[in-house]
Image 1 (cartoon, rainbow over the protein chains, first blue to last red):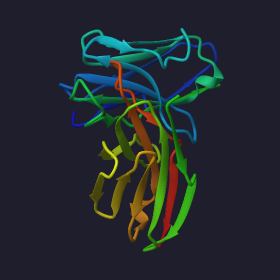
Image 2: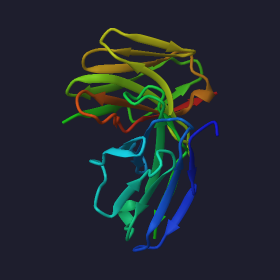
Image 3: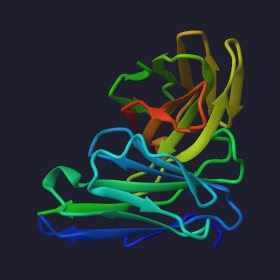
Length: 115
Length: 112
């Protein structure tokens, strides 16, 4: 497609439930990023992939968060045993370049609400 | 610690009333400073990248400038369609990561 596609757009999870969020980057984009945006805040970095390699996962808040991009295209962010503080918008972005944030395109995000 | 602070948190303007948004930053080796626009329910949309002090970039009614400690986003004669949250972000030097560090944004409302 023309842009970064994320699904689902909205997800309501009961506390303790596992969730999986999907990101379809722009075709051919090498770099893929996940960010978490709490209400009224700026996005916060979670993790970065270059092709299928996860080069930086320093922003993942706990070992309940796991991300993968097995074939260097679609990526999945998984959250196990969700908690209320996980409620946020999860944004995916992709970039053609391996270096730098030039041409960084964001998807519209998945809004996760944990009840 | 790398940090970005934006002010004001919110700004209400009348149509045609020019103003500026501020982004102050502390970063270990600036690789780039970015401005994004975010509409409700959407992801951030790229506006500008600035790389060195003294650099300026313009797009329609928007002009971004950069010094060694801060960046300004000047909005000239704004229109209601300029209403959005404006986010500033920096990319620090060193390492393999290309992450952006964002501020909390300025919520701009332009009234007709």
